[in-house]
Length: 229
Image (cartoon, rainbow, N blue to C red):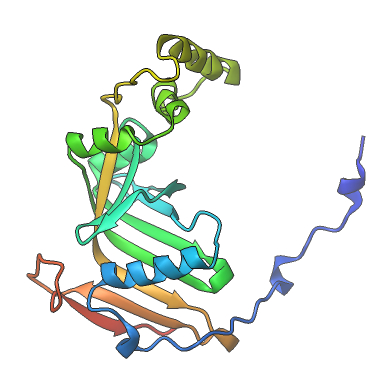
């Protein structure tokens, strides 16, 4: 039986357009390093009350180049890179283990900005993982144990049943051990592009590129390129 929604016209994406109006982004406006520039923009995205400004799309690939993407939450950043946490046996965990090159995308549409990072991912220390795990809500700690992320399950009830069993084993207030198969990845940037939308699609795209032979994150380790929109 057809419903009223079936009779409504499907929106045409070809006619959907947004004119971005913002101040030009100049090379002289940038911080010396991409992590410093990210900190500036992250503060502004947070001040603009964006929903989950720490949400980022993580793209990984198999050794033969088959890509996959998903949205995860950034949980830490500093001069060393960007950190997120996951099940190491998940699809992204397995792909990073086999192919360390990843890309991150922060899609801050309401302020007409996005940041694209490419680099290599490595596991954070177990000590760092455990320290972060302790800060998670009790339910999220149980969820990390209950979900064998990316594996096929028979039903939602199967997942809920695992969770309820764990909730009985570790009631609220009791310490939950960090799962051995769960932990963090740190993405060390090789490039970082800062995109600012403008009218008539004349967007600004400024990309930091790590200078050859440089391993530090200080001033002088990066050069900046302007890309055509």
